[in-house]
Image 1 (cartoon, rainbow, N blue to C red):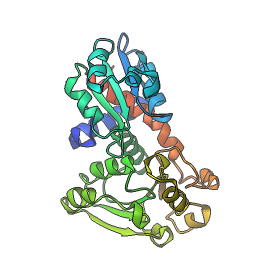
Image 2 (tube, rainbow, N blue to C red):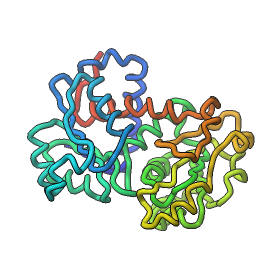
Image 3 (cartoon, rainbow, N blue to C red):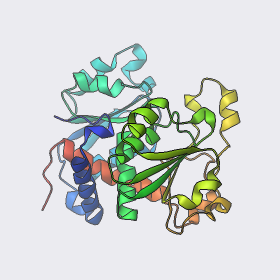
Image 4 (spheres, one colour):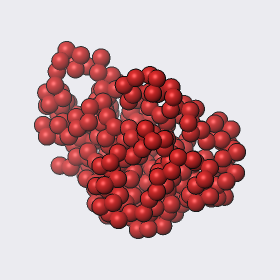
Length: 307
């Protein structure tokens, strides 16, 4: 039995196998409509989510399976003080696979320790978000045709952004990846990502504070929102939230084939005028999230691929 807590829980070959399966699902989704008949997915979401929770549920329903779970800690026995370990012990009797989002880093890892079913980390604090990373990789591979030889700009909240941390961890394993880290001083990438991931893997990167200066270099621009829920005081959030806003004036500096990604939800860090630019692919990215989660569920449940 395999759990997915971090993107590193998959080898590069295993990642590529999941992405290839997702691409086959995109090509012929009807072929997969009944492969999980009789299987149940539990979605244990201790903090709010729209895309991640609904895309997991859509994925399981598209495969012919069923879903159960809760959408906030207040609607679960966590409100009564039940531990993650006890919850997953019980859920293991009800479902075949589980997707968990939790505000505390490491909670899905604790769940995996006590679980009798595969556990998928659907986001834990500011730490990891492996299924968003799979979504990002599928988007890049499908639309750029490769996962190597890319200059990737990461912009906004690089300190608390778990999607950014997960994506860096995944992409450093591919050849000739360069990062441009665009953020204010207060939201720079954490030291452990810089030292243990980028420096340790001899990956080329630079840290800048002006988006326009680096736009012409980028093959991909990954925008993130400044996350109010990660701040300890509102003054810091208000001061930083509007520092980086992507608009059409900035897009003028970009390559014709640069892609703009965003894990969503968007607040105001991408102007709505950018939505109609063909390089803006964040809504297509959200659609790909369903296909890649279908592939992941099948892989972890060891469901046979239909002919």
